[in-house]
Length: 277
Image (cartoon, rainbow, N blue to C red; front, side, top):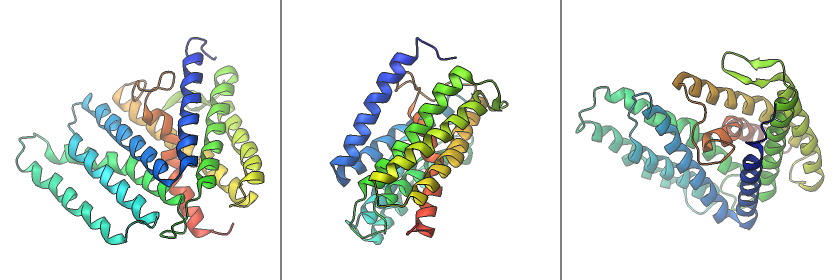
């Protein structure tokens, strides 16, 4: 059932997000990269904060610096601004995290370090691949705003349809142990919304064929759905409802971008393997 108290703030927040993200993508590659850097930084910090509640002590400052540097170097190389040797800047940062641990008095240093790098793996790595999608082929210097914008349109359509139909008519749990609120009805509605928008996107954004956009929609529905469930598994294991409160009606950044993080590596792989689909 749709909660009337949460729907207005959710709708307002959603509209603002759509406008900010769309404007950042359409303005140019600089604003697009800045958008991803902001999303990455806030989401990584949110990820670390989740585990603080469980007594884990990720290296927040150094983890945030490393994740930002990794994403920045990947974006600069993908966009053709820098050469691949710039990746070497990340080596001293990685080493520095381990060396700094020698001077701490942590009870479980490698346990804490593992969650520091887990945040980078689960948030920054997918965003690096998503950033690269906008500049394929890599180092070509071409920015494909339509592909990124179409990606978001499909993702938003899927999430919105799944939420509205699942809240109003959902009765059969999709994965009861992990996320009792998610239903088959909502998931099927999300898939229908994704494919419908993918078709219309293919009519106007012709950088990819209809088949290509349909493939992206399939990946978003399936792998994005798994990304959502994995995020739910993390929250359930930590006994928290939302990953944060920064987005009224949506929770945190991890709640809002879990589908993107789950699907981006597979969309990237698809576009590399089938560039002319």
